[in-house]
Length: 470
Image 1 (cartoon, helix red, strand yellow):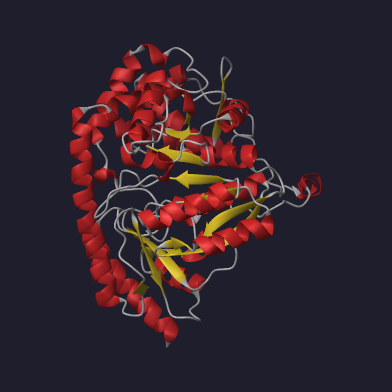
Image 2 (cartoon, helix red, strand yellow):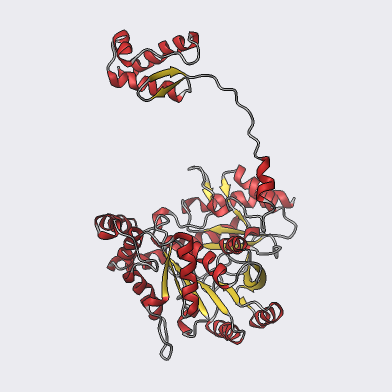
């Protein structure tokens, strides 16, 4: 009945508005209630409907009026071209892994785990407790909650061998996500226009952070076993760089993990060059068939700057990470963070600490590894069956992605568009190369939603590849 009354009022007023001049005052709510025999709630709903249609506008304390017709003119922002000048690097406003999708699409492009893989109960309970605690109302220390810093330090100390001094809480700086940590490290340790070595291919966010910091990136080729130590030595010698960014465990996008022998040799190269290794341990919680081996656990001389995030494994809404750095470099990073954001939300830090210190956290991680294995094997098997042209250099032993090479000459941009037209989103590998791509690759996320649809997604990809190859 109320809906019928609302519709009658809207219809009646639309006829009245059609005859009224712009700016005319609409009859008052009291008058409309009397005319239509309606209650105040019904009249208010009708007025909101008319406002949503752009027919009336409300002026608080005055009344409601017929909306004046405004002539739309094109806006000219050309002046900004001269004011902004040329950018140092072209940074895309939204990278492929950050794109949202429609509910009926098959998303193989993203970089985050499916919601079904997250510790939902732990997160909700932790947020509720944090909201009732002191951290909800007070400012956090610039370096972060002491208890959370102790936890990050203890996690790395647990992997530290005898003879190496473990890190302490004072070496830890809490970050609002590891992406901001990369930006701070690159600004603080490299500086504008200076050279920095980077694995290729590598994490697209690190490439963007380097571009934003204005550093000069020098790619170092990296394969299924990581970079060649001799090639890394040559790059240090030729460029004079003092920093190498890498992901030794389950690299994004390739899934590569360095062997213990390779890691030892690369750490030796970094030490001999008097340089830093920025170790991005983004996939620490996503081991499947291999244990994570942090290189930072073997260095107490301050050569390794270690990044670890909880955002992907706890919740994308809890953007909490840490950098562990020893010596003056820690103070430089802290100073940059202070200038950038002052401190990290104590509420989010408390919630993150609550989650990872619950007994069920370890149980959750064991179950997560099993689920990732099943998803990885399903997607890899679907590719082998439906996209025989796609070549996997190896099946990753951890992480969230498959890195597949396609035949030379294939138009990746066209492939992405064709797949999207058929309801499947994939990520072209070009975004993961800091220089020209070494070949036509695609990165496919096996931790995304709807694993039962992986075979369907592979079929669409296979048809699109076959069509482009003729």
